[in-house]
Length: 117
Image 1 (tube, rainbow, N blue to C red):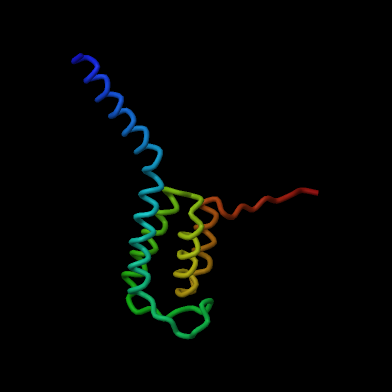
Image 2: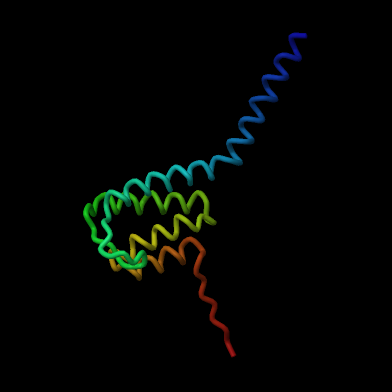
């Protein structure tokens, strides 16, 4: 009877390890996305009612900290389109289009294939 008790504990621990390995990247990506959202809200202020317009930077340090969180979110979950959209928002506001293009290439969202004729 005692051996079954230890077997159940080992199976439960194995299940926890498997689930944490499977869900861990998504959880970490979500954490970084939420942390960035708070930083972005504190760092930017809308200039006009147009949601595509660049915003005024109120706190540059928080904006950079938010961008770092977003890059981590994309590293943990490369299919996180929301994180890439928010990262683009920060880059457009700072007018750092080239840096955003480099991040797109680094994370695999943008690939350039040259065809020879």
